[in-house]
Structure formats: structure tokens, C-alpha cells
Length: 237
Image 1 (cartoon, rainbow, N blue to C red):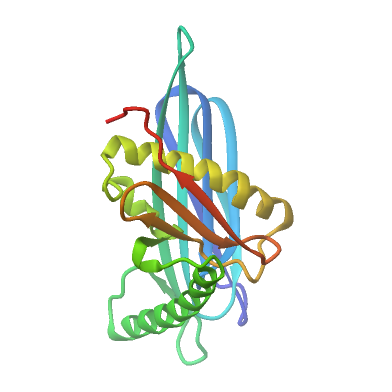
Image 2 (image 1 turned 45 degrees about the horizontal axis):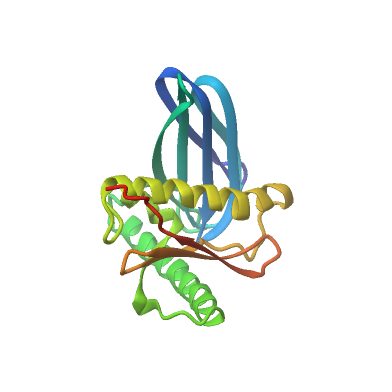
């Protein structure tokens, strides 16, 4: 893992596998470091059961790495019937790179030093994210009390839990549509231009009445943006 005295490398790997070939597969993985976008990996495949996304990241200083991935597959049946399956996965890693201690990495603290570093890194990141998100809320004149706020990297919690006032089936549809919007408006532009130092974790605002969601973020130019997704289920229960 250690590269030299000033930097280190991390192997970033995301993968998914189905037990059968599918018409279309897509995986997307986003990596954030201390709340800022570090890298994006995505891949499309046809008639494949497995997708692997893998790369090596160079880092320096003590940091908190967080990744969230979205896995999607379409199965086509006779008479133009299409069914889709989707899943989200996540992972995180804390790296301690300090002159006073040997280089080490952990996911869950196992001693007092690691616990202290986790709290320090989380506090610094959360302060910065809160400031950025508050700027976005103010810019779009939104009241956070009207929404349940979920950072994009924490969206995986709704893999097994329904969104407010929605059923599990409705939740899957909303999340699938949300990732479509993110891919077109957030991920593709960054893939073309590369991450910006101003790119922080997007904030998802879930309407407490269960009618819509908003995604607030800074684009590849550092400009404030929002995506609005109104829920429509056509009598879907």
C-alpha cells in the first residue's frame, strides 16, 4: 500500500455478478475522499453476467475514503417484456498517514488511536459538507425541515428500507430513476472533464410527504445545481 514517504496507493475494486446472462448490464461506482469526489468508474456490457471495475488511487495524508456503487441489469423477454434488477453497495476505509505513527488503514477502529483518528476525520469532513450543503439550500431557497436529508454516499441504506411514505416496490423505481438522472446530469459531465476540487458529496432531499426528491450538487464547473424528481407510479402499489 505504501508508495513512498509522501504518498500511498489504494486498490479500488467494485464488482457484481448475476447467475445468468442479461441483455444489458451497467455498474457505476463513485469514490469520495474526505467528502470530495476523487474518481468515477462506470461500465456498460451486453450479454454478460459479470462486471468488474478496478483501478488504483494515489493518496496522501490521513483521509476517509467512501465509495458507493450502483449495479443495474435488464432482462428482455418475448413480446417486448423487460424486467430490471438493481442493487447498491458501499464501502469505506480510513487511512492514517502521520509522521508520528506507521501508515495504517482500517474500516472499523480496533484501538483508541484509530477511534480518535476516525472522530477527527469525520468531524473535519462533516463540518465542510455541512457548510457546502447549507450554501446549496440557501441558493435554492429550500427549508431542510421539509425534507429528510441523505448524502448520496449513504443512499445504500434504502437498499432494504423504503423511502418515506413509499412501498418497497415504489422505492426501487424511484431509486432507479434517480440513478438515471445522476448518470446523465452528474456522472457523465465529470467523466468527461474529471473531478473538480469543488466537487462535494451531493445531498439528496426526500420530501417528507412522499411526492418528490431533490438532488443538490456542484457540477464539474463548480456551479450549484439541483435535480427535481417527481414521483409517478401509475397505480403501482
